[in-house]
Length: 63
Image 1 (cartoon, rainbow, N blue to C red):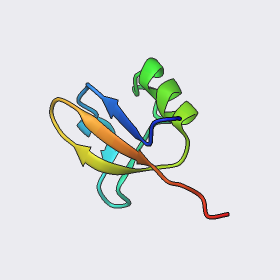
Image 2: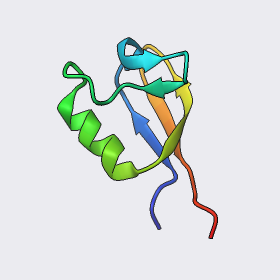
Image 3: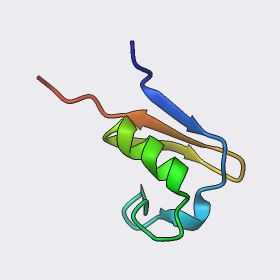
Image 4: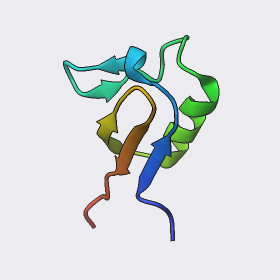
């Protein structure tokens, strides 16, 4: 069973866009390894974002 929560132990606040509550993963300065993990994880919403870690919850698509 795949995890529904992705925990990234890194400060992603510099790439957080509070206007639309998203991470700007396509910016050149965004860490490449983290970008790849997030894109592989799929569609998500931010649960928490802070100095030491970020938690993302997978959005399940209705079938």
